[in-house]
Image (tube, rainbow, N blue to C red; front, side):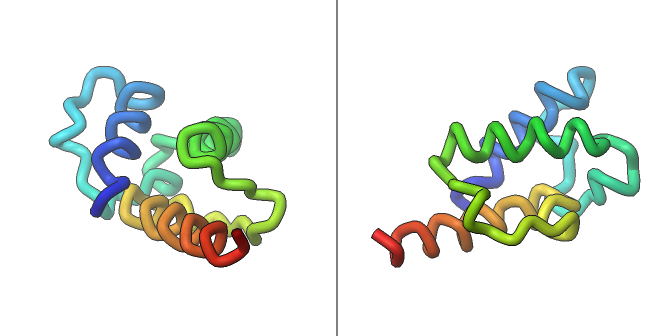
Length: 87
């Protein structure tokens, strides 16, 4: 999971400042648990665009892609592959 640690650290820093990154499970539902709301989701997307150079204009954004650290990591890996194939 090459992206998971950075994603966890961002989520904890921005949304769970009192929780160590190691305590955030990769499969915790960040949306249903209220960790990330709709505005937070926009912040996550902006961070992913900046950090990984993902252009979300060309990608179909679904809430399921942002439910957990594991889902976000899968989204980033898929977007990175699509970007590499387009280049």
